[in-house]
Amino acid sequence: MTFLRFLHYKKQYIYLYLTCFFISAVVFFTDSSGSMSWSTFFYTFSLVSIVLIGFLIFRYQEQLRVIRQMESQDYDSLSLEGEFAKSYIEELKRDHIRERNQIQNKQKDHYDFIISWFHEIKTPIAVLRLLQQTDMDANSLREEIAKIENYVDQALYYAKLDSFNQDYDIQQCDIVKITKEIIKSHSKTFFSKNLRIELLAETLEVQSDPKWLLFIINQLMTNSLKYTDVGGVITISSSETPQEKQLLFRDNGIGISQKDLPRIFNRGFTGETGRTFTKSTGMGLYLAQQLSNKLGHYISCTSVIEEFTQFIIHFPKDSDPYLKLQKHDE
Figure (tube, helix red, strand yellow):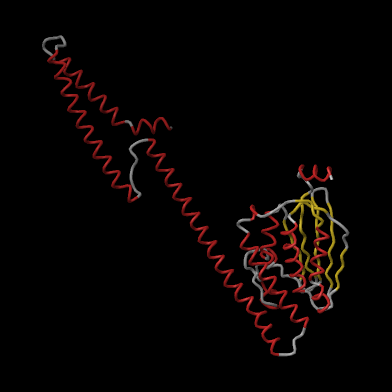
């Protein structure tokens, strides 16, 4: 098919060749002398030259017409390579439009997040100002400062999301040890809400970046603390299968509705729980899932309203030969 298309674009040259051949044949057969003389040769050459000049003028006019039509993006190619070049340029334009739309969408997402972030961080700041004007309660003060720190962390990690590959260090780390650090940092909230923590895991080594993992676990812990009622319990355990290692967060809080469950990791999604019980940027779980995916993990969630919510961080089995060798040398 490509050869036939090639012939289609070269048909004018084929017509030129046949015309020149026809002129030469007519002159030869009409020559009364019966033999080719120099005068007959020059006569034939002149006729063919006139046809060639006319053909070149015709092709030149066609080229000018196509060049003028290029600005309107609706023109016919004059060659096979021109057709492929046109298709290639059109594909580049489509790619450019897609990339431009993606950049515009990303800019809009950044703008929406920043606006939401400013609104959310104003709440704990306003509370702190009220506490200054009254008898300051230490627990309330710590709680509002913790909210501000969490919002600042979200903004920081959201800003680093696109440059993640320049700022991570995969290594063997004990995720239970990291979880204990998170529990300790939230100890005041556990006491103030009279929450019980059950840590049913002693150690669980995984391959990850401890700094980013600290943020991920903190988002899950913050989520559980936010939506677990006074006197509730948060259970943290670990599990291993032939394919992966798991860290499980389970609380007996208000739960998540089944219609919201598939969307809780979407950017900016708050759902019924976030709108009804507390203000939320809807970015904590989104960032936790995005960072987990970049580290080669992922988070799943199951929940029943008024019964429980369980988050599971899934880690693949150790597969990095460099880390295995490093551990062996130690």
